[in-house]
Image (cartoon, rainbow, N blue to C red; front, top):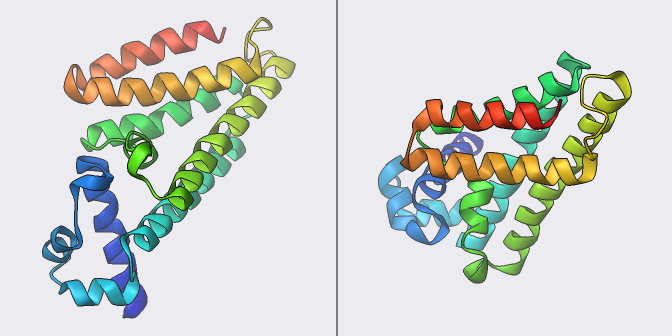
Length: 187
């Protein structure tokens, strides 16, 4: 029961942060969303910082599993990048931004430990993409001129930016145009 409550709190807090940002929600908002008293939230997460750390950790673990699944599903570098991009497209369809980007946008007010967790999230994604691109170059599924380190950073920045922008402008259709341009840059 306690574990279920904790998971429910994390799930709802994630939605709130992805929709409103880190500073855009309070324990009162979370309590109203899950139907608990604030004291019950404090039992599981005594401080908002502890909640934030747990959120970043859970989000990172979920993405790590997704990256492992993408890696196992195909050796094709371009197919892996496209599968990675679909993770962002899913968020766009849910009308939610990336949790890590929402928190990174508020860098100046984030507690240092949360800032470090968000940085690690992005570092892991860049490292994974760098490996995907290097393997793709080696097996011919990524263009020989593609520089894995530079392109990995560009992919994350492009997808994060497209997710934010297309939530305002074009939705999935606009995101798919960005993905098409990204795909061409990797051939």
